[in-house]
Length: 187
Image (cartoon, rainbow, N blue to C red; front, side, top):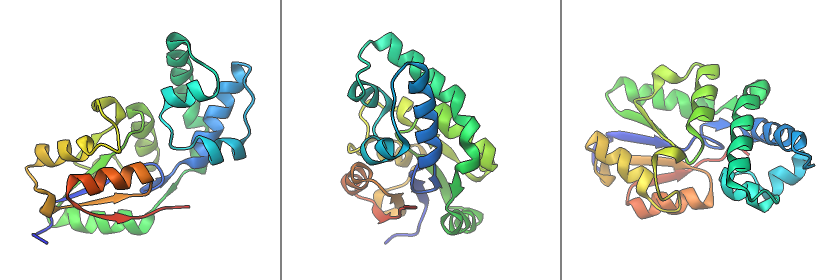
């Protein structure tokens, strides 16, 4: 491997365990809309599914209603931040690498506002050099576009990059990027 220049971190499930917060925020949002869902059902069937697809899976098909529910979930999400947990060993390693000049990016299919809000809550904003989220790319994971975009911005090759992922689609995107990758899950 060439000298490490860039670390790319998936957010939900890799750097931060947000499963419970996401579940509770979606459950509260859907409850307001008259759709009942349990935490266990959400975690087993829907966690990690992009919002628009998830909403369609639970029977919401109107694009305007999906947008309104997505916004409401973003509004409710901070109420459940007390349940999020940082992957301390991974974050400590990234901070050590960053101190030597290695760039650290968050690369996630999550919603930009959700990521930014959790990062503020955990006081992580100054620890990363950039964020690419689901709103920034056309083709989500399993396509490697998000990883390739971060490499291009930082001028890093695949050989100079390591990716940390936890989901099947994320691992496939990492594999397709050509970078070294590691599977880390907080489950």
